[in-house]
Image (cartoon, rainbow, N blue to C red; front, side, top):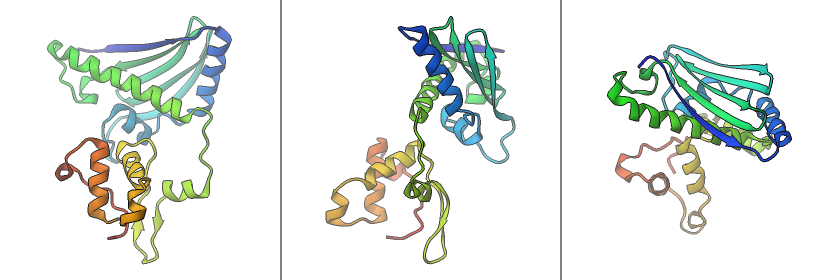
Length: 209
């Protein structure tokens, strides 16, 4: 398989609504092609040694704005079709980009993973639509910091499954009554992720309690 394209289309009742939404998506997602975003959308780990292109290209056609987000040899294209349909196309130019073999018998697996890319792309865009996290508390969580003991506490990326499960575990009122340890937090987070506790690698919070 040299190239496979999988599309998801959302039809709007009125063209003006589709056009306004498409313009807003372009404004809110100029950085969608960054490696950390592409890691979430393609569900593939991106390291500093990962080869490939990670960028966003914004163009215009007769129907409006076209957003191309590039991941290695592949890309996700979001555009307005016929003035009233928001279309998300995942174009896989190398099946190895998403961990699938290139032979034709793996087409179903490749198509399923490409549809998951489309779904995560729409989820990421929906989460960012008209949403600005400017609170100092949010900034402290989203940026690396130093603890009082001088130990580095890494940032938590919103949208990443483990980070969101951890946030959900910290919001449980049970912790206010019974206290919280790394052991209990690990069990709560693993449960929200639907994984066995023994298979879950916890996120380091910079403290032992």
